[in-house]
Image (cartoon, rainbow, N blue to C red; front, side, top):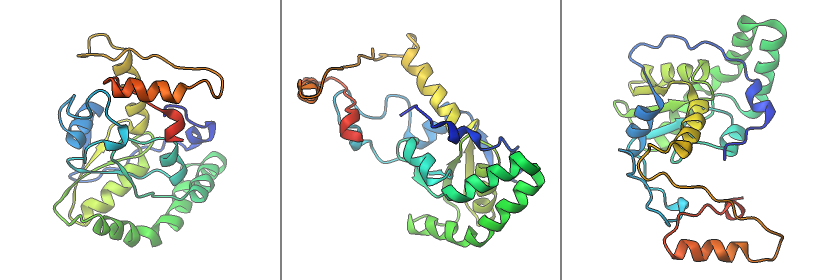
Length: 217
């Protein structure tokens, strides 16, 4: 879940515009707002697909391919750019600079603003509700969507550093011996047909926490 295609990091790190009333939260505060206190999630041995419902609506505004490659559990994808638009805007930034990239981006996203707000309504959200928004680096994409949603009356917070900071946080948590009950990570490998999946299922039955990558593919 932590491998990122090289092209994903190509999107320029545009600075976030100011959005009145929008809070920028560090990753631990953002996750607590989304999922509750630490260790409030799944118990060891439970299926990751059974991750409990989020406390607030978490919105990933990255492109669909970025979201598919990995996202914060429980988040929903309301992309500012589709995959093609993201590629075009990133290319424009590299070739002509920030101003031209913004103008190009506006041509794509302007007509879609009402669709994005409609997507919130389809999720059952209404003005006054609290939303948590993030993009890849916590820059212009999340700040722009936060501005739009706050303009429509929602209370919006964004993730400082974006999804990249969440990935770093995960790696820190897994490798930090001071975290309560850190889980040692063991990788089960072997040739096709030797029964790796059966072993994983048996470990899960015995109460171990298991991540079946093949089953999630």
